[in-house]
Length: 263
Image 1 (cartoon, helix red, strand yellow):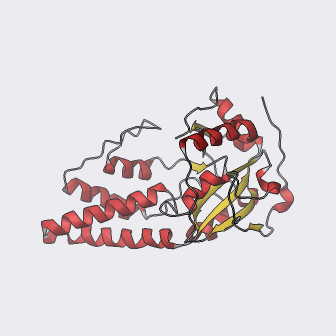
Image 2 (cartoon, one colour):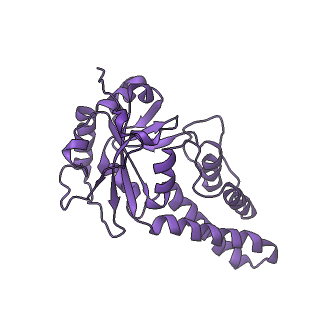
């Protein structure tokens, strides 16, 4: 089954419509019907600290929010502690990465941007504790752990590594303490052909998506608490994606059947 949708190019270079967080979230849709009913729209949740770049250049594949040199030094710091990367550069979706392996994956395999077919699941990455994305939380927690261990060892030769960890922690906190934002993004059939997916709620773009495809945004306050989802509701979420999301199903069909993993 294929769905057809057309990008309204008249929105290029015009202000992005801003929507308010609803007082009650009861249907897993944060956006009003004029957005949530569209079968060509997917969602991206992140920190408002990234907004200027996104709203100027769109969603760029290869963007590293934390400076490459800092993360490379953090991998070296883990090596001092005896942790060697197990990252396999030839494996796109490698399971069981250790801490330096996950950082190497961040450095070497940033070839996609993540989107979700539901605004609810995108909002996870626009609210605490994941605002800015899982990788920001992971890098900050890893830097803090490494810093504490190196300080406990008390070697003067490790001072540069400790200082680097402190700098990373401060930078990540800046992203995480900012409000969040969820973008609604229109995906044409041509763009959909450049997506892949291995999870029901995750759609991975392998190409840059220009700013003019953003059809709406929602600022998520720092004190916003996303309602919890039970296992039963997760199944409902999955059924909703398969039933309602045209562009997501087109992406799933590119790899065969729609995934059934609701986790």
